[in-house]
Length: 294
Ligand SMILES: C[S@@+](CC[C@H](N)C(=O)[O-])C[C@H]1O[C@@H](n2cnc3c(N)ncnc32)[C@H](O)[C@@H]1O
Image 1 (cartoon, rainbow, N blue to C red):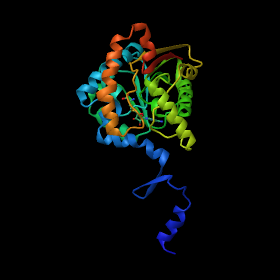
Image 2 (cartoon, protein in one colour):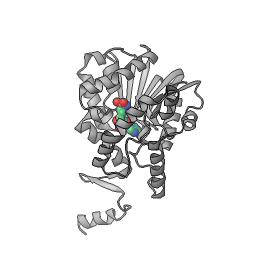
Image 3 (cartoon, rainbow, N blue to C red):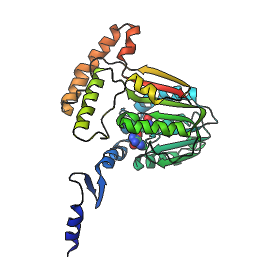
Image 4 (cartoon, rainbow, N blue to C red):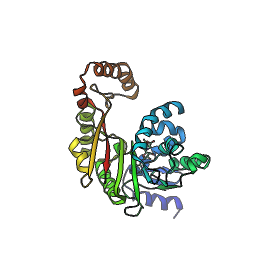
């Protein structure tokens, strides 16, 4: 029997359309979806983690967040950056504020490789010892009560809610009592037009048997977020952004969607924001950031 025939027999053991062939190795689609981050890391790491065209734009967008992080972090802290990407937060935070230790966790190896490369060339960042771990956010190879502060920035939103629930259980386990968790751009609000679309799309994914698909944004009700922080002593939800008109329509092809966003949704939202009374703006927020104490 030829080797090719042997392989044909083996290939028959696979579920149809469940894998992707990468240079002779079969990658399960659920994992392959995740490696979109590896691809983005190689093409344009700045764009992969923050929607900004240039380094200067990324720095500007990061400045407000870094100022906020500095208010919650102490120099003696070990900080865990969950879904660290290429280490954007470390890049801007550590030169200004060296820490006892920085742990970057990410499922995309290529992102961590970029982080290591930059860190190795940056004496300012090297004042803080660094540990990079290629792992999933919901199975952390870290000891109980081992970190002081956690940052999760733009990571939860593309993960299934079950994964986020397990990741939060992991954070409860690894954060020291009195430690702080800072969550940015991770809980888009369900009570919005975008949220309604997202919930409908998740219902569709459930129906077609792909509930865990990595990629689509998951939307949250306030009560769901509070539930994730059960057992924390202080939990503050901060409404961020403004949108009444949905910024994207999932059924539109990419180009039409961009036209909708740039030509219609963005200008209309800006005008509506201008005339909305302050007390109503809370109800138009795009997402919640969270600060919680263990
Ligand atoms: C939008 S980037 C944000 C990177 C960084 N936190 C920042 O704000 O610059 C999302 C990152 O989260 C990682 N990620 C997403 N889901 C993950 C999971 N389930 N486990 C580990 N990493 C994950 C991706 O690989 C990617 O590097």
